[in-house]
View 1 (cartoon, helix red, strand yellow):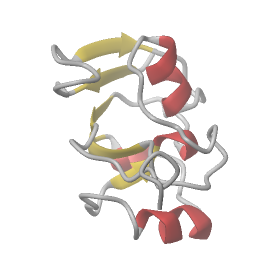
View 2: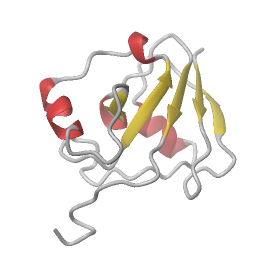
View 3: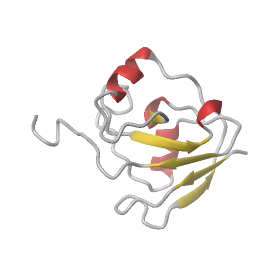
Length: 112
């Protein structure tokens, strides 16, 4: 069973977390089910960037990103080479370490 390590995030997960999870599960859903309230303004439909995460370990084992996801990521705050939208990531059979960026861009909440 793969292990997901969530690095500490000041508001969402101050102590960090270690979660045992199932291969094939949605990363965003796993976070929410484990009381890490990552934003997901588009209800996980790959239409925003609020669930942006940075994969620190295990990136190469993940399902490939789609062109739509990559286009959206271009607008994400703090974009890095290993950035993904957690709603589009399926947990692989390898352990993973993720970081939730300090900020997110939520156009609906910010009245843009």
